[in-house]
Amino acid sequence: MIISRRRVRFIWRSLLNCVGRLGKKFNVGTLAFNSSTNVKPYPYRVREILDASLPTDPLVDSSPLPTLDVAIPCTIKDLPLLESVVRAAVECSRNPIDEINVIVPATHMNTFAEYVASRLQPSFNLQLKNEELLLGKFLDVCELVAPPSRRGWLIQQVAKYLAVIHSNRQGVLVIDSDTVLSRKRTWLAPDGKQLVMMSFEYHAPYQLHYNRFRNIINPQSRPVNPRVSFVTHHQLMQSNFLTEMLGGEALWQHGLETWIRSADFQEKSPLCEYHCYGTYLTTTTNYGSFARWGNRALSRRDCDLTVLDNIQIRDFTKQGINSVSQHSYLL
Image 1 (cartoon, rainbow, N blue to C red):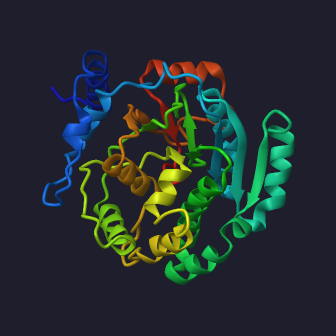
Image 2: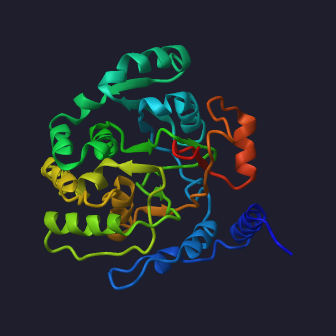
């Protein structure tokens, strides 16, 4: 008997959902993290099982909840999704949301302003941020380091870090502009404990970049290997931990420039903002509370998320989907 690939995927996802219901007993902090770089990352399927074993909202009983900002770097190709991304970000946060900063290329500011005025204001406290003004001197560094084909990709990562550092809030929920959340969660507790998720994909150059960068910032630091990946397409970031990672309150600007220059662009994808923050948080602090990622990549052809309603969100939640990413390359 021949079983179709779609059927195999359905059976595997059903098994993962069973793990989620029956498990929650893995000590992932012990399983996942090892300061030795000699160990290999967990295999892909093991990372899926580890993720399925995690609770979806481990900080749910926290109170009172800190208010967050949201940061969404967005390019013109993802503009049709922006309304859904923003609405889902607010709907899926137990933490109150204050300011939503959408970071856009200078050349498209007027187009975004018209879209926001007609779709999202005054319902949300949403601000458009000019990418070039936000980056300032770091724009020149990005243009110097990255080849033309990867500059926009690098600039968006740097913009996320700067949005976190410049926020007046303790935590900022950073979301990719092609990712729609579908599960209500507590992102940050009053004691600074925060949600952290691990992803299925693993790209070794990201970890090499992190260790290379940290060794420049602090030559006493030892290489680490968390054995999992944090490329989750959305992540809560706290400015105090981010500035610590970059060298401290007084030195973070130098640290951010070092972070950019440490990237080896002989690799197509040599660094990742989410992976670096997740690695630092989970290997140097005790403030990460692991939660199930539960992300699903869906093509824009098969699933239209430009108009999102509560029925769709509930349907995703029933399937164990906590977020949906509609990457433009998924035709």
